[in-house]
Length: 209
Image (cartoon, rainbow, N blue to C red; front, side):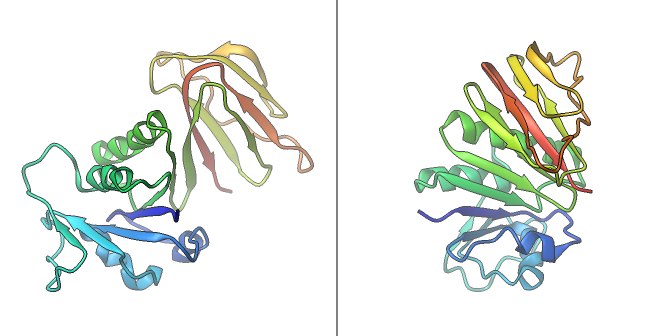
């Protein structure tokens, strides 16, 4: 199945960079004022969702889900749930970070919702890639990033091992009270850093140069 790509209304400056993530078979979902990015991204909407409190409602309501203004889900979270309801396994979110911190944090936590439901999700923006590392996973991080950071966002993150980095760990724990896994670096252009986790979840943020 194709990938479910959700585009929110936060600022995007480097459209070329964001377009480089797109695939030919992506299913593009624009959330409310995310529609302002349509022309610059050059990706036609497959679906539009929103309560349209921040963007005019499309005149043509074909493939448009109009949401009530009073609801539990934000427009973006609704789109994530809609993608899961439709059976998608892979999600890419962009235009969902920056601006309001509450919205940004809520969107980041949607990656955790995807992960616990057996889905893969990534957020990308002008500065970073954000994803979840779950228990039992091993992730390789390439040298091209300026920094990578590991944050505990669930309360449990133990059995953390990092090799090939400036700051390595062996069977360690990161707690929410002491987030010491920020601004690590991949040491060698020839070798990836490798991160594994035995219990819990970690937020992985790879920061561009």
